[in-house]
Every structure is written in C-alpha cells, then in structure tokens.
Image 1 (cartoon, rainbow, N blue to C red):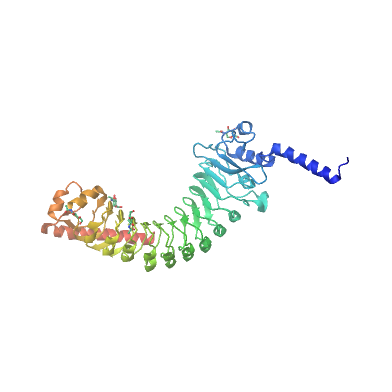
Image 2 (image 1 turned 180 degrees about the vertical axis):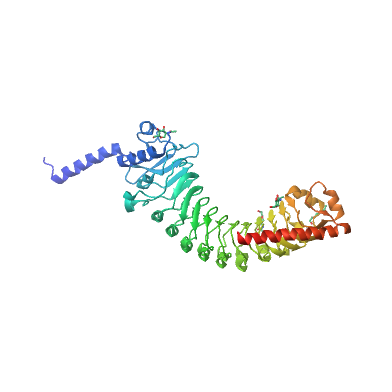
Length: 439
Ligand SMILES: *[C@@H]1O[C@H](CO)[C@@H](O)[C@H](O)[C@H]1NC(C)=O
Ligand SMILES: *[C@@H]1O[C@H](CO)[C@@H](O)[C@H](O)[C@H]1NC(C)=O
Ligand SMILES: *[C@@H]1O[C@H](CO)[C@@H](O)[C@H](O)[C@H]1NC(C)=O
Ligand SMILES: *[C@@H]1O[C@H](CO)[C@@H](O)[C@H](O)[C@H]1NC(C)=O
C-alpha cells in the first residue's frame, strides 16, 4: 500500500510534534541567554550559569526568578526580584540591565538597593534603537539605588502595560518627561526622594486611573497643575518637600476619593479654594511649612473624617475656627508657630480621640478650656508653650504641675509680664513669617 504524499506530510509533522513535546516546558535558548546576561551584569552569585543551567525548571528555579508557561508551551521569565530577603543581592558592580526589556513575558521587576556603587542610568545605549522599553511589563520598581543617576528617559512612555511605577530613593535628575503621563494604565506612580527639577507637566491629568501619586522630596518648581483635578480615582497625593508655588488649584475639589493629601514644605500661599470642603474622604491633611498668610480657613472644620490636620509654621492668622471642634475623629492637630489669636475653642475639650495637640508659638490668650482629666490624657503631647496670653485656672494648674503644658496660672500679677512677653513673641513670629517669604 502506498502512502499519499499528504499522509507522509502528516506523519512527519506528527513526529516533529512529538519530538517537540519532549522539549516542551523548556525555555527558549535565546531567552536563557538573555537571562544569563542580566545575571552576569547584576548578580553577586558568580556561579549562576553553572548552578542554574535551566533557570525556569520546576524544582531548580533560583530565588528571585519566577517563570510562567506561555501559550507556546515554553517557560518564560515573568518576574525578577533582587535585593529584598530572601531574594539574591546585587554585586557592587551591578549596572541597570536594559536586557530586561528583551524578555517578552516579563511582568514584574524589583531592584531594591541594587545599584549602589557603580553609576548607571536608565537610558538605552545608543545602538539599541526604538525596541528599547517595548515590553509587557506591568510593574517596575527601582527603589533605594543611590548609584542610579541621570534623567528618566522619555522612552519610558513605551511601557504601555505599566500599572505600577516606583522610582523612589534613587539619584534621578532632570525634568519629569511628559510622556510618562501617557501611561494611562498607571495606578501607582512614585518618583519620591530623587533630584527631579522643573515643573510638573500639565499632561499629568491624563492618568485617569491613578490611585497614588507621590512626587515628594524632589526639587520640583512652578504651580501644582490645575489638571490634577482630572485624576478622579486619586486616593493618595504627596507633593511635600518640593518648591511648588502659587495656591492649591480650584480643581482639587474634584478629588473626592482622596484620603491622604500632603503638601508640606513648599512655597504655597493662600487662598485655599472653598471647594476643599468637598474632599469628604480626607483623613490626613498634612500641610506644614508653607507661607500661607491667611486666616485659618473654617472649611477645614467641615472635613469630618480628618484624623490628622497639620498646619504648622505657615503664618496662619486670626482665630481658630470653632468648626475645628467638629472634627470628631481628629487624633493629631498641629497648629504651632503661626500667628493665631483669640481663645482656644471650648469645644476642643470634647475631641474624644485627640492625643496630640500642639498650639505652641502662637498669640493665643485667655483661660485654657481643658480640665484635669483632659490634660492628663494628653500628657506631654499637649503643647501650649509660647502663648504668653494663655493661662490656666488655679485648680487645673494645681493638678497638672508635672504635665508642663507650658502655661502659667491665671492671676492679676502676671499681666504686665505677659504683655511684654506677648510683644516679644509677636516680633519673633513676624520675623519667622517674613523670613518664609524670601526663602
Ligand atoms: C562581582 O562581580 C565580579 C565580576 O563579575 C566578580 O569578580 C566579583 O567576585 C563579584 N563580587 C561579589 C561580591 O560577588
Ligand atoms: C470616625 O471613626 C469611626 C471609627 O473608625 C468611624 O466609624 C466613623 O464613621 C468616623 N466618623 C466620621 C465622621 O467619619
Ligand atoms: C472633663 O471634660 C470632659 C469634656 O468636656 C468631660 O467629659 C469630663 O467629664 C470632664 N472631667 C472632669 C473630671 O471634670
Ligand atoms: C510642638 O511644636 C514645637 C515646634 O515645632 C516642637 O518643638 C514641640 O516639640 C512640639 N510639641 C509636641 C508635644 O509635639
């Protein structure tokens, strides 16, 4: 019986397939070689090639490497994790292995304290061309790498699948490339603790899915872009310790899911938009050290979920709004070193969760409205020092000699001394607030 040519073809196909299946679940040799090259350039384990010839094979996978079976029935590297125990550590000579972008199935990369001695950049070598960064990466986390220097390359915009980008605590410099804001799958963007300069591009508003934005501890300048109001999913915003100028943008009122907002240590000024009271999810509002020069906004007292409100060293003036007594969940209130006048609101004594209250260095006056049990509860976390016009009724003071909230007993004898002290305190504060303007 003669076989037709088509049957022969089928038979030979079948034998090829069965040959392949014995090879199945191996890595492609080219991918193994790419992984070896990455290991050569970062790992502190010199014998890697010898100890793990089949790095993805079940039972012999190296810690720090994870693999997945692809639809092509080959194993592919899906995760690289260096620097955190028990994963491998990096060699002192480690440089950024741009070959990671040649691993087509790589989803997550973590390099923690990996590039520490040998200066290295994120930029592609000139001869690599456009293929650089073109990958399926979803999570890129390069954290605490003091030798990682230079700019964030604009080609980062090619990492279209990125959901989490963490480039925190490196020595990255230059401007934030606008292209980074075209990565519209991003949920989490952390560029904190670098040396980034220049303004935040208005394209920021394109990241419609962003939940966390941390640009703190850089040298960013210019205003906070109004487009920030387009980040409707944002829950955490940290812009502290930069050199942002101008005011809080009006659009902030649209960030109604925000639970954490930190704007401390910038050059922001009043006014605060009235719409800020729409941030009804806000639990932490941290905004110390800005030259605000406005009366303390009563709207802050409408943010009823607040647990921490920090507004120290910011040249706020006027009375403490009575509405602040409505912040029932407040545990920390920092208003020290402003120019606040008038009395401490009576209602403060009923803030049942408060455990840290700092009103020191203001121009507050009158009788402290706290009874002995309140003062005992807060102990050293109550600071009223440097308010020469404040005094305490005899009975409370008597009970609290040891607590030392820094306030003397009310009495006619101390009046002259107090007004002198008040004048001294005022000139000190005016000097501080004047100094802030020129910083
Ligand atoms: C770092 O890599 C170099 C060159 O590959 C090697 O000679 C050296 O032993 C490695 N250092 C450590 C601490 O593993
Ligand atoms: C205060 O906190 C409690 C417990 O976390 C919570 O149940 C309550 O809703 C909060 N109150 C407000 C006004 O958010
Ligand atoms: C102290 O003040 C609080 C709040 O006003 C009150 O609930 C408490 O009963 C007072 N305690 C004493 C010992 O007077
Ligand atoms: C209150 O603030 C002043 C000035 O910043 C600081 O020195 C003091 O330690 C603070 N007090 C408390 C109890 O935190």
